[in-house]
Image (cartoon, helix red, strand yellow):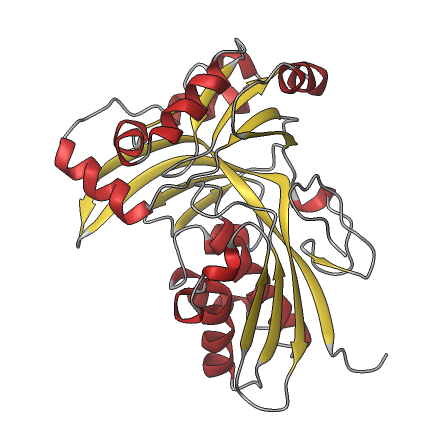
Length: 314
């Protein structure tokens, strides 16, 4: 087999089923969150360069306006080249994950770049890749593999679970986003405290009691997010209005989700949605369920599994 010059990687979105803010440490908010990847993804294409420079081109979801110096995909490529002494890459990101929605889009792109460059340049040091991921956003290390996990600390401490529950969601994706920085600042200003629920939600989910687990789905950042942008509150109230098993905002907003027992019920809710956001039916995805070659997130020329919205992949 000849040397590979181009690779395509799907960077998957995540949902925070729970998000507890447990305190602060060294200036950072400490979290305890139950997360799962879903079948909404950005398609990331990487092409080898003959020098150590990297570039990024964005398409879709308003991502064209992201300045290169603030682009996590480009930061990931530059960090990878510096850490492993490789040449750079030209990156094209076809975005389906909305920006500022709490779905981990920028982290998904960074994780996709790290995985793609690892394969392009034959790097075997996954520990080193994990260390890089820790510097590129709280979700990046988790999104190198995805699945069902508990994230603690700054998101750098991960516990993965073999359980692969079939979870069906209606996600409400508003046009507007929420700045994570502003949301956490507002959280501090409000000074509110909430009881932790992640441990209880996880225990119920691992016991196979989905209705009980869903009762704990919640997000400590919700009150601050809705003050940053009213669309976060609207999305959550719309998701909850369909009487799901559970509903919550994801990340620092603005997107919200509702969990249903079956995909048919999620499709029913979508058919009755009359709000101004974008409603999309999502399902949980796990590394072993994604068609691939050697790496569950690195795909061939064929399209990967999953539902996308907005612009279509070419």
